[in-house]
Image 1 (tube, rainbow, N blue to C red):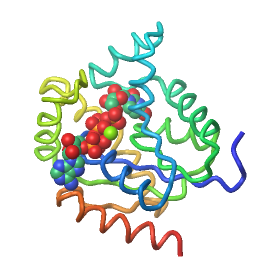
Image 2 (image 1 turned 180 degrees about the horizontal axis):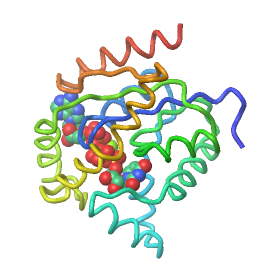
Image 3 (image 1 turned 30 degrees about the vertical axis):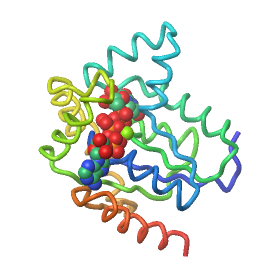
Length: 191
Ligand code: UP5
Ligand code: MG
């Protein structure tokens, strides 16, 4: 199981808002362990397992995989890492996922929410889709991902806003500028 002083930050934001990009920078400067739920799911698909086939078709439709799957993948990766400070990227994506994760693992300390208009996210994803090889980076799936985000994931942000845990950052400026804001949040947390 996990050390008692484990610290968790949820990194949230719409599809293509820049969660992965910012997490990479945070790891380089602060040394958190970065775990992207989507990356863990895509690894599972690549493994060629039977379960992977089902996951792939759910992701292709822009829907959410069962929370038991993501929570198990995240928990195993957390334990395997041996680390104590985590960036959980792209999870939780629905309220019940947040509740179950926090019951089974532990409450998150902070949420970083990358706020970005849909037009900007769409442009980024279509552009990335030219080279990413991701089966969900196409116009049709992107629309579905946005609907899922609006309906299922925004309530997660609202929930944590009521608890005063959300740092809302604009994801629109260039990555360096976004990261400057990210650093302000993290430096404040550490002090
Ligand atoms: N880019 C980044 N920042 C930029 C900036 N400031 N200015 C200009 N360009 C910027 O960035 C996306 C693109 O934008 C890149 O080309 C980047 O260079 C550029 P990235 O950092 O990759 O954004 P990110 O928010 O990480 O986008 P991602 O596509 O990973 O977000 P999603 O949330 O859609 O994808 P994820 O991998 O988390 O999930 C995929 C699917 O898995 C989901 O749709 C769902 O089906 C499933 N899933 C679950 O079911 N449950 C989970 O818990 C997690 C995933
Ligand atoms: Mg990502």
